[in-house]
Image (cartoon, rainbow, N blue to C red):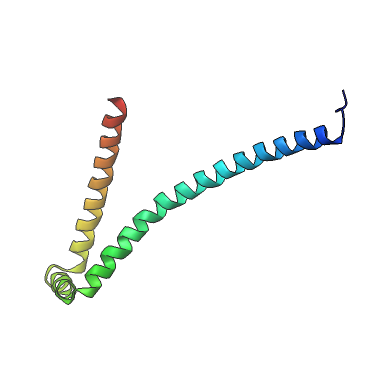
Length: 99
C-alpha cells in the first residue's frame, strides 16, 4: 500500500526519525549517568587528597607515622581495611536486596 502523497510519506519518516532520536537521547542519558556515578568517587578522592595536601600538619603526621610504624605495616593495614570494607559492602547489599 502506497502513501497517498508525498506529505504522508514525509510525515511517516519524520515520526520514525523522532522515535529513533528519542531512543538515542535515552541511551546517551544512561551513559552519562553511569559516567557521572563513576567519576563522582574520583572527584571525592581528589577533593580529600587536595584537602590533605593543603594541610601541612596532616602531611607531617603521615610522614611521621610512616617512619615510626614502617611502610609495610601501613600497607598491610590499608589492604586489610580495603578487604573488610569490600566484604562489608557486599554483605550490606545482600541484606538490602533480600529485604
